[in-house]
Length: 224
Image 1 (cartoon, rainbow, N blue to C red):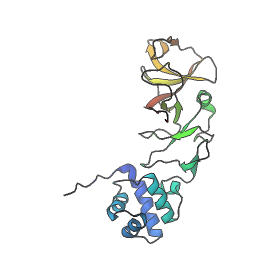
Image 2 (image 1 turned 120 degrees about the vertical axis):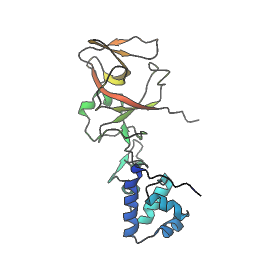
Image 3 (image 1 turned 180 degrees about the horizontal axis):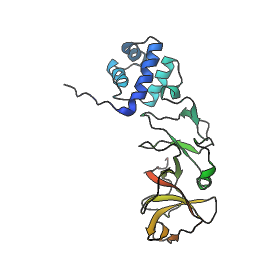
Image 4 (image 1 turned 180 degrees about the vertical axis):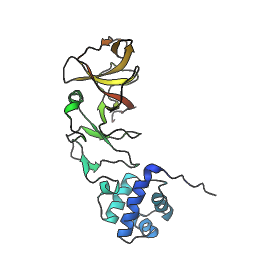
């Protein structure tokens, strides 16, 4: 006997939108399955909130229901990357994508509109939901190696209070450029510690400002 898949709460919103779309077009599970060339059980699992269709299935479903893919995923408007590619602000699974911004923008985060409306370098999807002001950055340089190699993507949460040992994005010396280091608190003193021992520890002065706490890292491998 096949084991029943558990209901995933993060899939239920998609299931409700799919149900409504099918009802509006007067489509049943079998009709949708035939149109997509899949088994009716797959559609049944989508409607039950047990699974989510992959990206190419989302596009086929949207075309069948006469809606845009990003509407099916719960976003009223698409987002656009620097290359002009349009896609949903909500990734399959219901987790909101976050803008990947430049290091200068990170340093000026107080001036960034919320939600972010500028032109990001790209849009990245964290594995867990983050706050509405979260953003991502591509790590530059080797000061945080080996834990954070150059080129990896970090997800930053600005609405979290930083504590000792957190990895943080900080602006220093009253400049727009931000730096990424580990926060060390020793009594009344605070420091920014690089993980690479070739770089010095930086005392935090009054003009330094923590832009956010790093909540996740994703390693990106170069294309060959």
